[in-house]
Length: 184
Image (cartoon, rainbow, N blue to C red; front, side, top):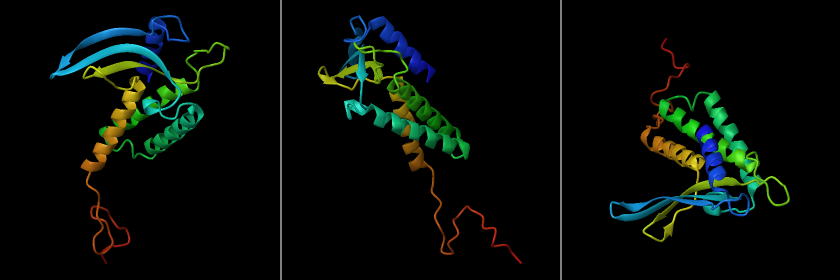
């Protein structure tokens, strides 16, 4: 979370943000090809008042509420040991928590940006910007977004790779113990 908040602060301080902070708002970083695919990467400061790909614009409080619930759920799974059952789950939970808190910080307006009337801007600061194939613009994002995507992907992968216990004909799951079934 620290890297996310620090990087947002540094980029917005250096580039400004159109309509909010003075500055160009954009800085080209790299343009080239990878495996024959034209790619352009730039830093471009934008404010997202919604969620992924700008969906749900103006629903800041709804997404902030979901973030608070997510923090509670992650905390619950960490506390009861499910999220710390393996290093994989611990890393996934850490990434999800860092991403959620990083974007929640912005949604609550704690970054200090203000509109023309002096009101706190409650929007996520995004700045990582990619173009592919010359004309396909990927949604502008930040490090917290990357943490969320990687953490969620790790949970999906884990759900496919960890074998699930299947009940036997007696109703007792394979690999579990039944304290009532003691030998006499």
